[in-house]
Image 1 (tube, rainbow, N blue to C red):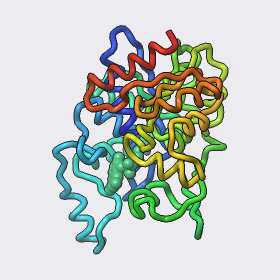
Image 2 (tube, helix red, strand yellow):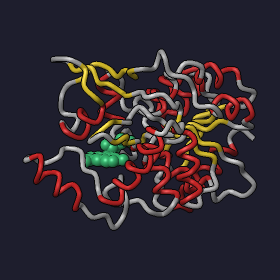
Image 3 (cartoon, rainbow, N blue to C red):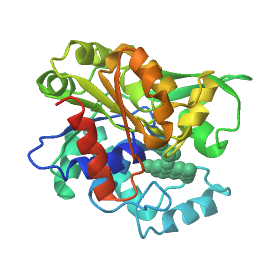
Image 4 (cartoon, rainbow, N blue to C red):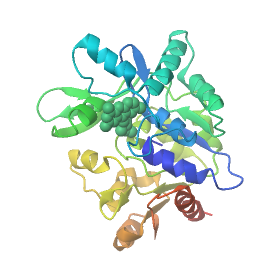
Length: 303
Ligand code: FO1
């Protein structure tokens, strides 16, 4: 899973009885700022499952205040382009102190989940520091957050790369969770910068290909537009179309089944022709119940 799309899907999935859920989360969006480690996708999932996320903004904590940020601007003499709220700062301080004391990120995530009463087995894709870089048409590669937040994805880009991927290892329980799974789900997250980056960690894609469990994906596209976030910006940077078929083709032989939006159901046969079982359903995650129905439908495709 990535951040917001993954989080909303998980809020539905966890309402289905008798599931034991392990979640592997992208850390390509991670960034170091003011000496602190920020892990946006991990935090989005944790805050959402804890009922603590700001649903309007789509990131960070609800009922947030911004005192620290304003004081930093006072000292630094400039506005920050990456906004960190006071409650959010507490998470980054807690995480960074533990990282500096030698505690693995996966252990810190477990501690966070315990403190928020989250009973899903959530893990980062890797404990090593990786970051998604965006290769610009003009100039060098920049951090994904700089491209997305500071430049609002307006700088033409040609590709995305996970810096540090070659040396990164999957976090301790990642490969065993994939191996032990009865079903592997690719939630409606960004196929390039969320799921795509998880698959760049050496060993993860191979483990999914080798796993006994079939793989079902839920399309992040509805009627040719991303449900949430920025899949279109990332797909078009790679010269790919923003469509349910294009994302399915991007995942390629990883997928056994692909659940697409009812508004895209004219693409069912094109996807079936790729050798992937395809069905359509309403995919708008308007509330947890809607997300639960989507999750149940996805699971049902391979039962
Ligand atoms: N997104 C923004 O559009 N503007 C921000 O200032 C911003 C700050 C931020 C701080 C912490 C955090 O966990 C996420 C934050 N995001 C912000 C969201 C983030 O840039 C991306 O949407 C995710 O990385 C994509 O999954």
